[in-house]
Length: 426
Ligand code: AMP
Ligand code: GLY
Image (cartoon, rainbow, N blue to C red; front, side):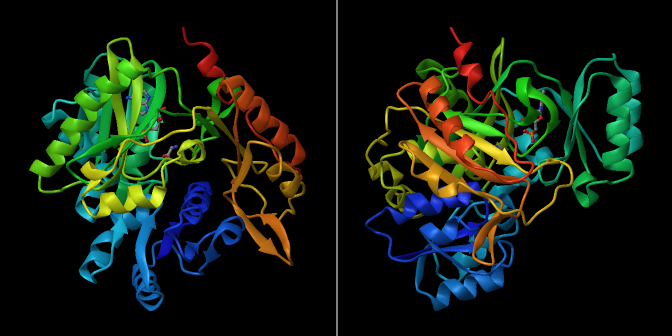
């Protein structure tokens, strides 16, 4: 069957690469894709949020399954539009994508479902938020814009003054626009972060192996927040016992609460967790594969991804056998443009891609790339996701960084410590 993947990042390249390996896949389209997705599939020049054009393309090209990578088209109702036209699309409907698209909705649902999460208050009026901050003890808090702000709507504050400034920027000056119409102010939690992703059809939950992202720009988790500078899987921070605890106390009650709220959840439920001394607590939910967590997850997944996605869409996940995994861990290093996460130049030619990709146990996923005059050039902040397997996490890390060394463009950089937190466990 023909399959359409929506999005243009490293996650979508990993999805295209994995889906193209399925004997069930005929043509694999990626809209709009990048230079890498055009090698493992066929790029289609339609933006990820242009739902009418995507629908028309799917109808005209006999697409039997559409897989949505990013959150924006899910929150905009892509799955609803496809279903209304009798087409199958993997991902939650608009009313279930609220779990990511509205932090107020998410926090209220977590509270109702009794899922462990930070204490919080919500505000519509910035003055009320500032009064609240002034009236209470000066403790570290996190100020969040309610809506989608491309991962930038969260300010982790050391003290009251920072929190007041953040509340004013988000809800007063509306620097994220309508996303800041409502505010969440929550208790700041301490601990290691981990990502636990599960695939669910609304009834059955298939938990994937735990991963860890690295959101800060620089080594040692310093510097500004980014979309994610690298990830590895599995992470020993979440052992089997903890994973079961998370299924029972986080994932299952969330899926049930969504069903009770008449917003059945189908797709990837991604719990961003803080592993606190009181146990794991949910920082946020995403309603899609994590980027870059998806990359190490998919190089390890042996099960046919099309079978998993189709069983989810058709609500028969209970009939799918257990997932099979490559026992080797995987490490993914993000190579970024000079200046990222701030402003950066695009269009720089990338060298060494083929050499890196041919190294054993290595796969180079493209994120921000395009083709210009027959050459692969940079086209984004996060440019490449160099992903490698290895017998152990340190060996996978070594393989990934060896491949990184082959690749060059002016100003290319990456974190040097991806997966080191795994070594500090135990
Ligand atoms: P979110 O988009 O809600 O995941 O927030 C982005 C990042 O902000 C998270 O990955 C954490 O590093 C940080 N963060 C969010 N909420 C909290 C919290 N309650 N305590 C500490 N850090 C947080
Ligand atoms: N890895 C973080 C995200 O996908 O939001």
